[in-house]
Amino acid sequence: MSPLILALLAGAVIGLALGALGGGGSVLTVPALIYLLGFSPVSATTAGLIIVAVTSATALYAHARDGNVAWRTGALFAAAGIVPAVLAGAAAGHLPAAALTTAFAVVAALAAVRMLRPSGAEPPERIRPAGAAGAGAGLGAVTGFLGVGGGFLAVPALVGVLGLRMKQAVGTSLLVITVNSLAALTARAGTGGDLRWEVIAPFTGAAILGAWDGKRLASKITGPTLQRVFAFVLLGVAAFMLVDAIA
Image (cartoon, rainbow, N blue to C red):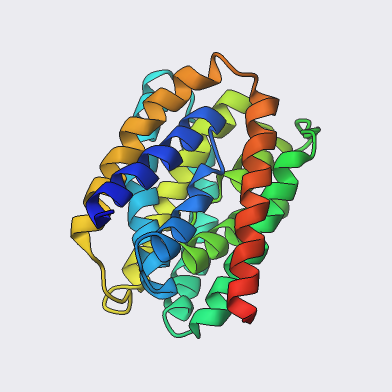
């Protein structure tokens, strides 16, 4: 199968997951780029940042139009993650492939476990600035290091630490992810490996279009069911990546 067809199919599936789940779907982008499209781990995480930044910015526009973005809160949360995203993005370009793959597998497994746990986050009685800064910095580091959006981390943090409503948290997380992704890309300039735009461009376009179908899918299948199915798929991918890194 040609790389173009694979890029379109992989992008559509990941976009479907993003649209249906609202967060966490982009974590499959890097494995797809490595194992289906032949990217190196460094190139895949850099390309993942490009794909995540574009799809997040596109989705952010739709959420902002509906009034579901807390701009000031999101800007402060994102600001805490800019420096960690830049530092982590720069460091990732110099790590051995096996180390990067192992780190990604661990984070993917944690994302799957987080999805399998019932959401019990409640708005706090008092917002803790130190907690908000720590959560923002942690998300920035994960985004910069592994090239994933981190919606599975951002949404619970925005609800549990900053007290946003769920719809606002989902929309605001897209602002945070877009900013962190762009910061990490700046740090990776010239060290991102071989970026094959003939693959990245159709992959991104298919992901954006797939996200719209994902929203329709979410209206027909219950959210918890979709989340459990995706979590088990993600656990399988994480296990495969871990075995591949160790072998």
